[in-house]
Every structure is written in structure tokens, then in C-alpha cells.
Image (cartoon, rainbow, N blue to C red):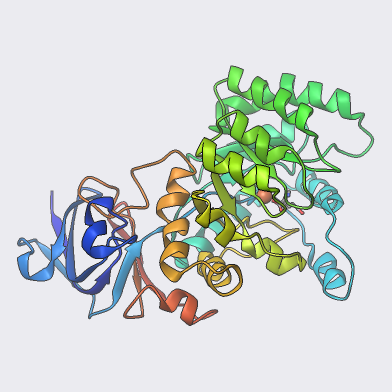
Length: 390
Ligand code: NIG
Ligand code: FE
């Protein structure tokens, strides 16, 4: 097995808690080197102490970070809603009802069209440093279209999420739809999915419906996650905490009780600032959550309605500039805590034994991700040790 030595790393972000004493939250190592072998990291440390290897890569003093872990995306869809975005930018409010427009286009698309569209978006993400992505269904909303959406998603990631409970499709009685989601649709979706999600919000599914749907998913071997408190205050975040879900996503409108429940339960709050950027909603209060001891992840929520960005760097820049996260907190949230939000400890951290998902930045430090918003700083990506962007 040949080993690759990446040396000349001006700043290495390891996220390794064992390096926190000297390297802070990000476990920084300066003038560092990494050895990659068989898809995994086999050595990390000061370049001066690096072991010999067959292949050498010189990072030229630039920064290396773990690949981004985007724990929330909706990539399986067809159609275009730029007109809806344009209307919003001149005064229309965001409405979850727009989901139905995408459902019609997705149902009309062939499997090949859906697959090539997801491939294009996953490539776009990878080129920007995302090496692990969760992908949801949720634009099919029929037994056939949800199952095929997940079959498409599964070609690109192990982190697939059944979101049949996105909205109630037009012309369907809500109670009947919950029966469908928890019955035949779940049976068809479960073989292709690891997770189950519910959009718990006024105009989508209420707390009791969400509880029923998550319980049915759990009975079928799917772990739960939740869209909650995106557009209004409500009981979704508290339900996620009560059920001990690994993560609850959006968390824009939170009461003191919600914040307390998050810090008591250890459920990760996944914030999606691209949504607030693209809908002109107020940003979630990341500082309040962090100061209360809540674990915070950042993800893109890449979808055609509320936020059509695939850029984790943009999310980091927004989190720093608009949500008062430090650059270190934001990067940690987009990597190690994103991994934790998927129940993963093999990615998001650069330490011996972990998957060799690394990103080379054309910058001397991770701070540039927020300092230089909109600039494509990702100049090299290794996925499981393989160079995929050079
Ligand atoms: O996460 N909130 C629900 N679902 C997506 C938006 C879907 C859409 O508008 O198409 C979200 O924001
Ligand atoms: Fe979402």
C-alpha cells in the first residue's frame, strides 16, 4: 500500500480534541504534515518529524482543513424556482407551498434526469470542499417517487433521508397522507434510507403528526431528524430533544425553553444560514445557543426553494459575519459537528485512523473562509485519500 505525504502545510485544522490544549477548538498544528495510506490518515504532526512516504505533495505553506460535512441537503429535484426567488427579492414572503411546484417537476422527470442533476450538484459541492453530504427525498410525495428519489440519492451517499413528510401533496387529506407516509411509502423508502425527517411547521406537519411519523420510521430501522422552528415558534425543537434525536435543523425561532431543552438533551442544533440569506428571514441566534452550551452544526440546506447554494464556505461566512460565530466555531460546526449530526466520527476530524477527506485552501489560514467571502479558495480535495480536485 503506497503512502502519500502532504507536507508544507502552513496551518492544519485537525479538529482533534487531543490537540485542543495547544491547538484550541480546531486542534491547529502549524508547519504540519499528514500521511495518507489506504484511504485513511496514518500520521499527523509537525512537518519536521514526518515519516518517509512514496509520494510527496507540497502544500506550499497553505492551510489544510477536513472536508466539509454537509448534513442537510435536498438535491433530488427537477425544475427551476428562480422566478419565486425573484418575486421574493421584490417583496413576496417565502412560502413552503412552493415545494409543490418542485414536486410536479420532479414527478415528471425521468430517473436519468434526476440522477444526472444530483451528479452535477454533488460535483459542484465536491469542488467547493464538501466530502460528505446527506441527501433527502421529499419532492416525490408518492410511494413510487419517494422510493426512486432515495434510490437516486443512494448512488451518491450513504447518508440518505426519507422526507415523505415534507408537505401534504395537493388534493390529499392530511390524515390520509400521514397513513400513507407511515405505511406503504415508508415500506418502499426504508430499504434506501438511513434517516427519516419531518418538516414540523405550520402549513406542513404538526408535533403529533411528526411524533407518529418518527415512531413509524424508528420501527422500520430509520433514525430520526427534524426540520423545526424555521418559520415560527413551535414544539418541534422540544420534540426532537424529548426523543433524543441526534440533530434538529433550522432552529430559527427559539424560546428560552427550546434552548434549555437543546442544552439538556445534547441534540445538535443544525443552523442553515443560507436559508435566512435567501429568504430575508432573521438569522438564528447562534451565539445564544453556543453560550448556553448547545452543540451547533452548519449545513447548506441546498434546495430549489428556500436556499439554492451548495457552498459550505458561504454558510461559514454568513455564520461568522451575521450570526456572531467565531471563524473557528463556524469551521468546526461545518466539519466535526456536522459529522456528529450524522452520527459519524470517521469524518470531520484529521487524526490517525480517520477517513482521509482533506481540503487544501489557497490561503494561509482557515480564517480566510469568512474573511474572503465569495472567493473560491478550495484548490485541492482528497476524498478517502484520492485526489478528486486538483
Ligand atoms: O429545508 N423547510 C422545508 N424544506 C426546505 C425548503 C423546501 C422548498 O422550499 O422547496 C427547507 O428549507
Ligand atoms: Fe431542509
